[in-house]
Length: 158
Image (cartoon, rainbow, N blue to C red; front, side, top):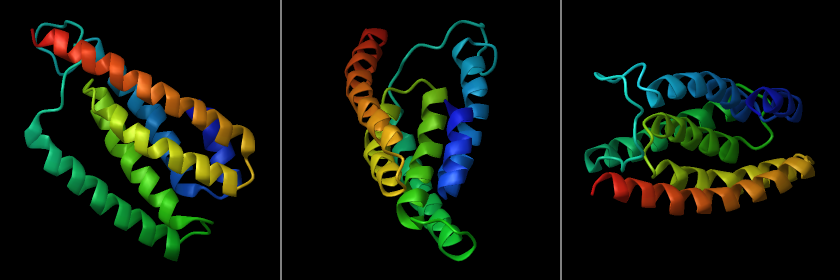
């Protein structure tokens, strides 16, 4: 999907989101290596679904805030982005969400729950109605993901 949306986003003027798709493509491989225990593991076992340690919450919020401002500014001043605010903010949240996903923290779904409606708006405004509809479906998956992953994380801590 990431490769497909790289083309769609760049042709629709959603430059930050297109760049995020490149990042997501790379991070998916990194996440797979982490999940399988190939990296960041001493005993090479699959990483369980867990909860984000509370000490990281301020870092996550700060990273989203800083990246949002930077992307919004860059897109407003350096590019031809049609919707720099929503494109920049959704991209910032996506970057953080992918890091959280690679760590297999259930809270990453909350980030996607916020991003997906933004993507619906971006795609709708850019005339890509099929993608807007797809992201509505993704929003349902986010809700299901939160329920399932949170349950799995609780079972891991028992």
